[in-house]
Length: 617
Image (cartoon, rainbow, N blue to C red):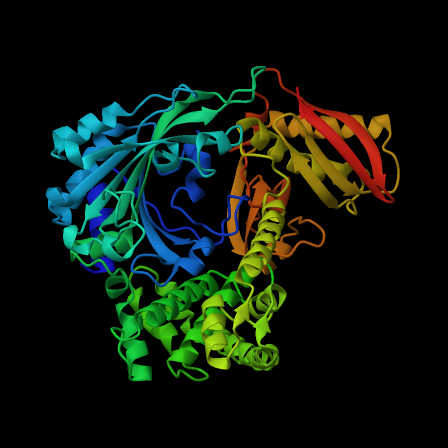
């Protein structure tokens, strides 16, 4: 089956069972401040998995665009891609394990016509230390559906526990998670690659990397939430107020196994491969790895640019640049000259014309961006080749030199190794290079996390309430102290919020009381908090507040306390800010019980910069 066929069958299957079809969110997260990209289907739905009501109801289904930057170096085998679609269905406090596993089994065996004998499943073996029980319930359901017992395996939290942070011990306080049950397709003994690999003496199982098994879907049962640390120092978990199902299945993988095809690229990149064969006169079969890397990287870059990300040296734009530069280096191996990659754009867009018509509508603009980036990179590359020749003259390549070639001149490591053989470089400090690259990645990751967290320590309910209070506070400060007050920093935990803002004098007790009164009045009014996606220019015209010096993409998320302007003067919201969220649904949610907003401290932190610490108590 094609991608379009599998996608449409999946959406229709769950729509017939009471699910509302929701559109794919952008690859650039708008309501998750903890990451650069949307890398899973659940990311845009996190506030609803945490307990907020979704306007579509309790049953949802979609096909979500995803990009995983950590997979760039893995691309080249038969299954890894950086861009993919995740089929997803959710139960928000509605059905649970029995219905979910039955739904997916029925979809695979009846709609996709996969023989049940080809299916293997894994379940959570439990963790006695953390008092997390073994998931025997899921195993029993699978048996009754027809999965033989020897096709059911149990694994620990490294394999069969899901949270955004990984294993239970790594989860921050307030993070939801739970056991999962994964489904694998068995290509059969003939695909075992053991004889020439490190796995040749191991018993084959669904989680080995021999090539025989391919994971095609994962049902996560969101049952637990991480509790604050207790006096014992041990991690503990409690049941979520409502138990949710979060399913994710690889569209490309399911389409591939529907054809019993272990090579995902033959199903998910057909038009791109055909275009590459046309412009090079070479075949995929004779240039498999090179074709895969070019096809994947160009497709991912096309979708990222379509979602407003342009090549740059920072943040999301850095990965678009890295994808395109790596694609250019491999295109050179096929003899593709200037402008060749741009011709792949339309082939990519036409593959998705029915599901993502906006990509084809932007194809001409995307081609221009890729042409410009390719031309600029080739100039950089010319300088890099001169550097390479200088190193060749020395007969060796230090860790620093290799690092410079990769990060400054865009040479992938594997091409450095190939050219070093051709140019007679016999000594290369690969291990030293890997250490430098690891340090660079850790620093970049830390910087990105700090920037995109927006000051939130976690996404616990208390933290989210204080985040909304932070928006009310900034506006109240502008009302009391004047419109020149601007945010200069923030930090929000479950215990308190902190805001740094521009103001040249110590606040009086009267000013502090007025600010508190305004915030508490707005909480009492129970005003809706609304997220809207719009162009950056439009948001700026509306007067949306944003942090000084921060850079924003062309498409942004704004949160307004009150509805956005509709042309009438009386429709202006109380406040409006550039923000990735998350927030409460209304200001009234801040006043649970007898909670009131209270400023605990006001002080100077630098010349012309004041700091407030405040709580809900």
